[in-house]
Image (cartoon, rainbow, N blue to C red; front, top):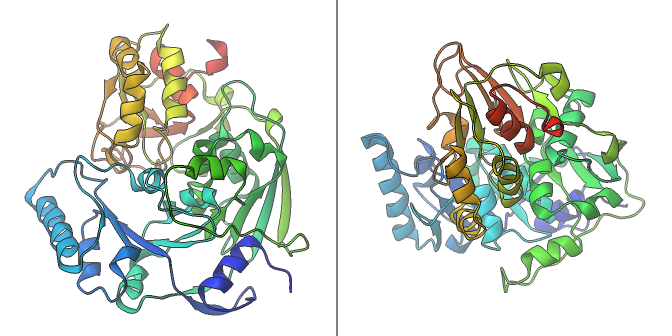
Length: 411
C-alpha cells in the first residue's frame, strides 16, 4: 500500500509499516509542548514520559499582569524543576513558541509533535506531523502516547511565484475562500509543487499556520533543500526525512498559481469572510498590528520597514509591531528596522502572543483594527463592538500610513 508523508510518519510512530485512513492508532510523539495559558499547568501534575520529550515556554504573558498568572508561571517553573525538564523558555528567553522551537532546532523532518493548540500546524512546514489535540495532551504526559484517527490527505500543488506585495498568507486566504470552513474536515493538507521552491521557511510556516479554519487536522510540507538550509547549524540531532510515495492516494488534489493571486483581507465578523483588498479599501482604521504566530518574522518586518522608511504612521492610528521572538527582534535591530519603526511612529512591543488574544492593544466600541493576527471574532481585542480585519504585513503597513485599508501596490 502506498502512503502519503503524513501516513508514513504516523505508521512509524506507532511501530507499524503502514496505516489506513480512518483507523484509530496510538502514537508516541517525539515532542509534546505547552505554553502559559491558565489551566495548562494543571495538565502536568504527573509526567510519565521522558522529560527530554517535553518543551514548555512562556509566550502569552511576557510579564504577569496579575497574581493568577504569576502563580501559573511559578507552577511551570516548579514542574520544570520537579521533573528535570530542560527545554523550558522563561520570561526574557522566550517568544512565540511556534517560531521559537523552530529557531531552537527542535522541530525535525519526520517527527511527530503534539500541542494543545492547533496552531502547532505552523511547524508542519518542516516536514513534521504537528498536531493540536487540546486537553487530550494530558494523555501524553500520563502514558507517553496519544490516540489519533489516521487522516486522509488533500494535496495542494503550488505553481508560479508571488506578485508584488502578495504573500503566502494571501494564498491561504484564497484557499479558505475557495473550499470553505469544512473543506478539509478531518484531513491533512499537504502543500507541494514547484512554487514552494520560491518560498522561504518563514513563508511556509505562515502558510501552514491556520489550517484548522478549514477543519483540517494539520498541514505538512515535504522537506527539501530550503528545510535543510534552515536547520543547518541549529541542531546536531540526526533526522530521517520522510517523503510520500509517488503513487500515494489523495482524497483531493488542487492546484494554485501564485502569479494570479492578489492581496486578500479577512473581514468581520470571523475568519471566513474574505475579500480582496480592493473590495474593502478605504475603510477607516484606528489601530494596526504586525505580530502573532502568523506574523512578526523577519520577512514581515522587512516589508513593513520598506514602507515605513518613506511613510510615517498616519495621525490617529496606533501601530504596534511585535517581533515574534527575541532572536528576530535582535536581527531587526541589527538591520536598523527597529529605528525605522520608531521614527515612523510605530510602537515596538515585546515578543509575545499578546496582540492576538487581547493581552495587548485593546480596543473600544466602534474602533477598527487591521492585523496580521490569526482570529478576528468579536471581542478578540477588547470590545465586542470593535471590528478586526486581517491581512498580510504589506496591507497592514500601508493601511497604518494611510489611516484606512489600503492596497500597498498603490503606494
